[in-house]
Length: 279
Image (cartoon, rainbow, N blue to C red; front, side, top):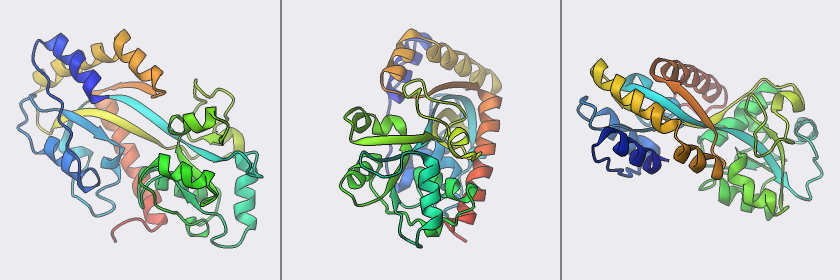
């Protein structure tokens, strides 16, 4: 996503845009590289949902306040999936079984310990009046390994974005029960929202925001926001996103900042309740 945006920004701004992957520290390294760069507009980056979680987990002091937010370009709601021969046909069936089952009977996976989909599962359980510890989390290296473990019978359900499970869903190996978004997904129109399925108000998703370091001059950020919006609205970006099942949403600067603030507060609330915070 960074690369397609980079190419579109380069064409519009007439400046080379080099995309650099900064992995490590569960996202801390890359997010730090953006936050600590000179605030001149020449270094921007993709700030992800992890910025609303890392500081609660004690991994960094960085928060949304360390950035000049340019715009949100994506959100991929979480979802709940089971394997094809699972006896649970709906999310309501699954949560009822978890409530009636023994502690530890139902196991879930989809990401590492404390990752976004772990948060998704914990938030769902809490919204249904269930302590997250009743349905233990089995860490994985991401949605794909978690889904494979589920298909093999290692865990009972997976929380991850439905596009991440699309190949196995299309192959008939996995059955989606619900999306954790506010509305149904266009690529899975028959999959209900959690609100529709169980009455739960819990929503969560992975998202991406383009931002620079805090303190960027207003004229610089305004120019970048305009160029980013143009890139977002381009046919090339839409084709890239929809072809891969990525969710599209546009929130410019101040709106995206408010979204990040709300996401940060929600993450803190659930992570504290689920025992995922540093303190």
